[in-house]
Length: 90
Image 1 (tube, helix red, strand yellow):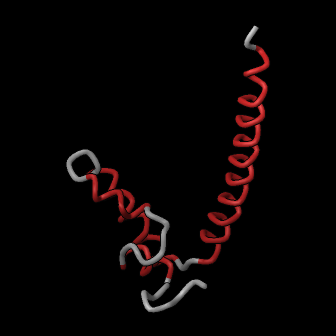
Image 2 (image 1 turned 120 degrees about the vertical axis):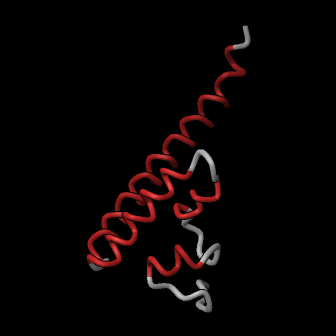
C-alpha cells in the first residue's frame, strides 16, 4: 500500500499549518498595535483609500496596491504609516 508515502505529506502539511497559525497571531498583534497607534486623521484617510481600492479593484487591479505591506513599494503605504522612502529597514 502507498500509505507510507503519505507520512511525509502529512508532516509537511502540519508544519505549514503551524507556521500559518503563528503568522496569523503575529499579524493580529501587528494590526492591533497599528490601529491603536495611528491618529484619527490618518485612520480616516486609510479607510477612504481602502474603500476606494475595493470599489476600483475589478476594473483596476493596481488599486489593490494599497494593501501591499512591503516597504518601498509605493509612497501611499509609506505615507500611511509615517515611513519615509529613504529609511532602510536593516
